Length: 289
Image (tube, rainbow, N blue to C red; front, side, top):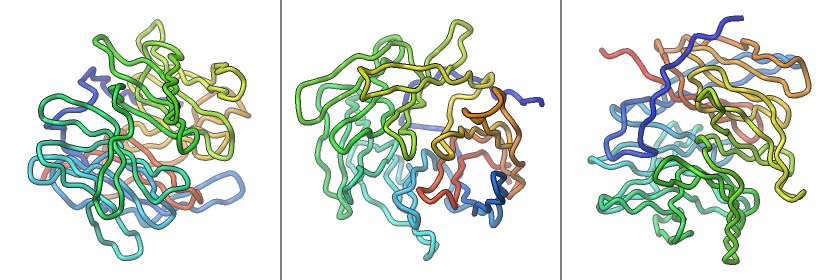
């Protein structure tokens, strides 16, 4: 098996002028343990930055979308094929929108023009409230509604913190991590990406219930920065226009799952899977017309 490498670019965590990208949505079909994709389409249909997809539920998809020179939280309704916005922050942008478990509200990283970077919550009517005040969160996911695993920005990179929103508790887990902070579906585990000695990324499981014990899973292929969990055992990544799976319960290797040929998409950078596992969103570049 050959993986085509993607150029690994060390850029600021977020930028007020992020690169162009598009969000594609696919239907997933399972046959025993194998899956295929169909009905691929560009749901963003919008020039500029369209990125960081996260399923609000099985019928709606959140993502960060450029609008009027800033980046706002977009909500795409799959059945209606329509897009609305949850934010329009004067002098600021939102990134990494993620639904708060057990709540209709959404959390996102707000980056203001003055450089302030904090985690906020957003209601469906657009009202926002600061969720964390001290930590400069880059990437995050929820362990519980009030417990967050976050990659926090420091002058030289990012550190992994476990933050309890109800108390002053903020535990440093490890330093020098990547952007891949994930909740493992249908489990009590979290996962994170750690920069290894070669400058690549290793994925670790974090057992929050057992004194934050970490367990090595695998190494991401060269140039890959993002991953997601297809289910509680399988990790999914994209490289160029292909998807690869790593089965944590099977042979220790990345296996090509499928090739995506929709609208000439190329250079997949992010992936999200719906709660039911029946839809996949990917972020990719598209050829310039």
